[in-house]
Structure formats: structure tokens, C-alpha cells
Amino acid sequence: MTSEGFQHISKGLEELNDLRSLSLIYFGSGRVIDLKMQSLAEAFKKLGCLQILSLDFSQCGITKEGMLSFGNALVTLNSLQSLNLRFSSSEVSDAGIESFSQGLTRLVTLRELDIAFPGNSQITDVGMKRFSLALKNLTGLKKLYLNFYDCPNISNTELKHLSLAMKNMTFLEDIILDFSYCGEGTITNKEMERFCHGLKNFISLQEICLYFHQCTITGYGLHSLVRVLKRHLSLRTVDIQFVCLANENGILRERAQKALNSLPLLKNLSLYVDP
Image (tube, rainbow, N blue to C red):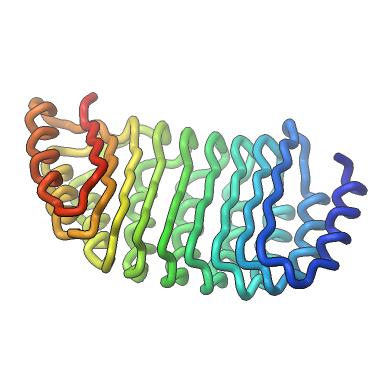
């Protein structure tokens, strides 16, 4: 679809003032979509009643300018409660993440946030830090899903940034983090303790899924994580996947499973800590 075609769609959306839910999927085959994004951004400014927004721009090319247009448009969505974004392999950079985050941080009405940027090699720890800072204001979130699978220039320090962002998210019920096959590294005991400290603040956590393939934790780090999860008696689903730096991974896994199985409402438990 050409930029002109997107302009026609955007013009049509502008007439739907009372629209509550919008879902749009566009696979760009690597084409830069800045102009298309700018057209949509102008339409979003007229959709003040929108509560649910789902966009998939996988395999598109989008620069800082395109993400800035989108971020600015988000600010106008004062009623938005659910935001689902897919930018798989879309060449998003740190500058693009930062531009988008400027709008995201003001969406204080959000209750569900599902963000996926898998396969974007230009995103680094710098972009992740800015993104995590934007999350700090979203204190009303109940569901948080972040997918940065196969972003090789993000290291395990993103856990530190997210820990700071989660401190005020006391109402979180579901949290899914996928940083599998990002940059290699060991999550230190201090970093894991900081992350666990953030988890303590959740009032009614029901689901937690942590996917950190290629990142390693120590036996102590795993013990710290299990210890804090045992406090959340409302947990129904636990899915944890790390590599554990210990000689007795099988024993560690069995102990962790035994501890978590004591949770009264737990229905689904998956624990992978082997190399």
C-alpha cells in the first residue's frame, strides 16, 4: 500500500470520533513507513475515545521521525486502556525508542501494555534505559508484556532498569518479560535482588513469565527469586527460563519447584534452569 493509500485510511479514521477499539496489521517487507506513520498519527489525534489500540508493523523500516510522530499522537489518547504494539525486525533504533517513550510515559490511563520489538539489532541498553524510565509513570498497569527477543545489543542490565520502573506498579497482576538471546552476560546477585525487591510491591500478582535464555544467574539468584515468589499467594502461573551457574542444576530446580508448588492457587509451573 502506498503512502497515498494510508492517507485515505487515516482520513476515514478521523471521522470515527467515537471509536473504542482499533486493530491494524501492516507488513512492510523492509520499506520505510515514516510517512504512513505520520498519516496515522494525525488520525489518532482525533480518536479521543479510543480505549484499545493494537498495531503490528513488523518487518517495516521506521526511523526516529516516524516513532516521534507516533509518540506524539499517543499523548492525545486520553482514554486508552490497552496498547498492543508489534515492531518485529523493524530496524527501530535507540533514538526511535526514546522518541516513542516520550509519548508512552503520559499514558497514565493504561491498564494493559504489550510491547514487542524482537529482532531489532539497533536497540541497545541506552534505548532500554529510556524506555524503562517511561514505564515508571504507568502506575495503574495490571498487565505488562515486554518482548525484546533476539536484540543482541541489549545486555542483562535491562533487568536493573526494569526493576526501577516496576517499583510503583503495585497493581500488576500479569508480567511477561522475554529477553531471550539478547547479549550474553551473568545477572549478578545484586541485580537479581533489586529485581526481587520490585516484585515485592505487587499486591495481587497472578502470572509471571521470565524468559532469559542465554542469560545466566547464580544458585543464590534463583533462590532469591523463588523466595519472593512464594510470598505471592495469588500466583496461578509461573514460567521461568534461565541458565543457572551451579553444578547441581537438577537439585536446584527440584527444590525451587517444591517451594513454588506450595502456592495454594498455582495451576501452571514451568522451571528451566539448565545450561
